[in-house]
Image 1 (tube, rainbow, N blue to C red):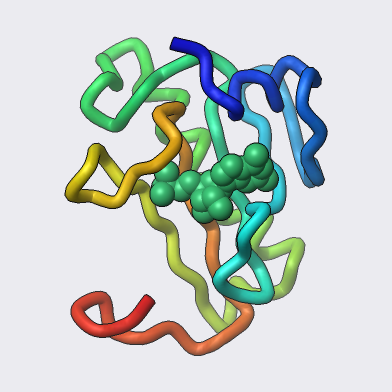
Image 2 (image 1 turned 30 degrees about the vertical axis):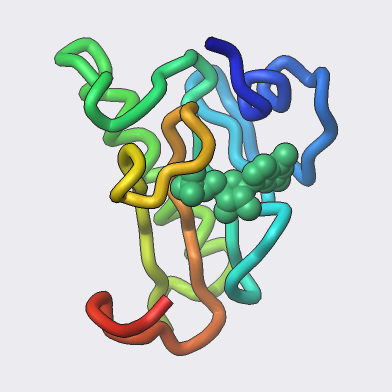
Length: 115
Ligand code: 5GP
């Protein structure tokens, strides 16, 4: 089923897009938890990490490399950042269009106690 993120990819819903290419669209999270909070999403509809298949290996790698390049452009690559992909309910996934959070610009807490 189509989500708000598919509508952003299609240009039907506005977003603060920072990068896009044939495979991914990257835009600022509407409710940022840090000075840098960008969502990297595939242009094609994939609901969750569980729905990735062999044919998506290049796409999944491209999402990571795109996040790293954006981090470098935003000059948080040396200080550090966090990449997060939430999967399904207990993983905290709200939007069922695959996405990777690029979060940085402040000190992160430990994964067991921080945000
Ligand atoms: P999830 O919990 O599914 O991993 O994260 C979904 C993220 O999408 C949340 O951080 C939320 O703030 C963000 N989000 C939800 N709807 C929109 C929207 O319409 N525009 C933008 N830019 N971000 C959104």
